[in-house]
Amino acid sequence: MRLLLFALLSISSGSCAWAQTDTAYWTVQGPVDLFTTDELGNLYTVRGNDLDLFDRHGVHLAHNSLNAFGLISRIDAFSSMKPMIFSRNQGQLALLDNTLSIQGNVMDLSRNGYPQVTLVCTGVQGRFWFFDERDLALMRVDGKLNQLANTGRLDQLLSFTPQPTYMEEANDRLYMVDPEHGVLVFDLFGTYVRTLPILGADRIQVREGFLWYVHKGRLERYDLRAFTTEMVPWPQDSATAEVLNARIEHGRLYRQTPEAIRVSPIPK
Image 1 (cartoon, helix red, strand yellow):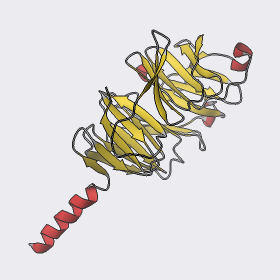
Image 2 (cartoon, rainbow, N blue to C red; image 1 turned 90 degrees about the vertical axis):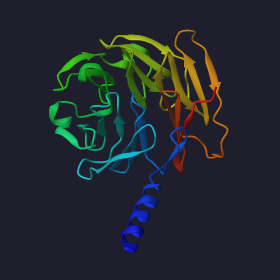
Image 3 (spheres, rainbow, N blue to C red; image 1 turned 90 degrees about the horizontal axis):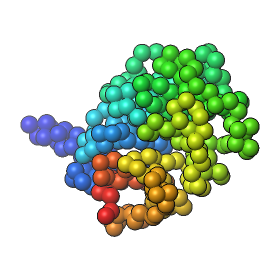
């Protein structure tokens, strides 16, 4: 009986190493290489090729190690039912289920005619967006990798050579981040719309009419209707480490620091 009680206590304390939770404030101990969130408030973390899934209250739901896939350079939970992972080094793309297991077959982009894809994100109707570094083109493809739209060479269109670091689809627009030139906006047909004057950001998130991003350790948001920028204060807690990345979901702020992912309500 004493052995059983000791084992149960060990399991309980071990789970706290993953997430410390009081529903509104909780922490996932790091360091974490990548993270993202979905529309339900679930949190996905990547450490090397280890993936973990937590619900919006910090409860650990799933873990998987995908060592044969290749180093994961992007995880995208545009759809909570089919999160996507991408390995830039291996040129591979895969969809996951809610246990973080691969659904179907891993897609080899090079074998399907896309040898120089460096950025990938997902969108509506199971579509994908690719940025091809060789052709400097943005492409939209379907679930079988058939091409639906192609911008052509962006250096000819924009009069500069883009060097994007991140992209995501939101509200029938594709937002592609170029830290030096701004956030390039395209419609679902690949037509260039405008460049938003957001410089120095590596990643962005579009939510509720705002474009959120971290710049020089500050949380800022750009109003997509008023075209204005404001700084949002960090929560007044004990965290002092520099924030590397942040996302918001359902009134909660997810902050990545070198030591942890910290979740708390968005300051008013």
